[in-house]
Image 1 (tube, rainbow, N blue to C red):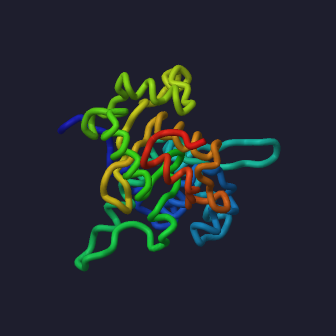
Image 2: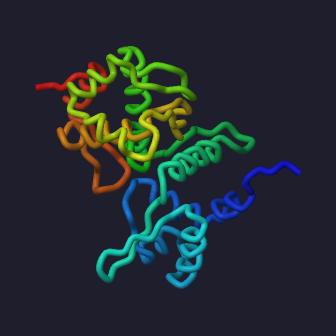
Image 3: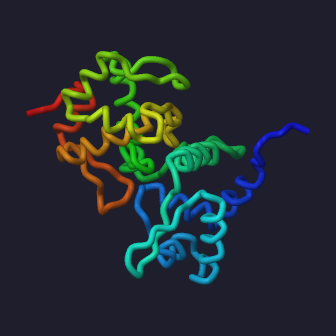
Length: 227
């Protein structure tokens, strides 16, 4: 018998419809209460608590306490990447041809994938980063170039701080709707943070949809700050 991790245990946890809806609700990067997740899962608070205990014990979600309040969030970027990948697989299964990804055009255009940008705009951004030689390598070996380091400095991204974090700097993430990769990792998160700080983009209602300003649209194409 091969000594491999027990994939079936994780699959069983994620495969339950209620838990799957809860995980999907956490994909915008926010921490939600048990009551909010019960509503997302379509179950009673007591049933939600049972599901949340299992997800927390497995390490898929983490409990965050603030005063008397308790919140739940995705435990790690790797969990979010797995959920995004499963969303893509699920949308493409079945006997009939289907349109992949969300029906909401705002989500298809641009959305938050845990802590980085996803959707059409994100796929285009990664394409431009490669064309401009900011990033090099295939999806399995995506890396920042020397020119990319200079680019990060120009747009106000602190690489030293990113490299101190315990996560990959650059990672390709398969986009649920586009079926192409977008940029994840600490650099992907930093780019989204920078777009939001510059008001080149904004999150609609604190949820997953992201709307770009004209300057933000220009940034995706030119990869330069617009004054």
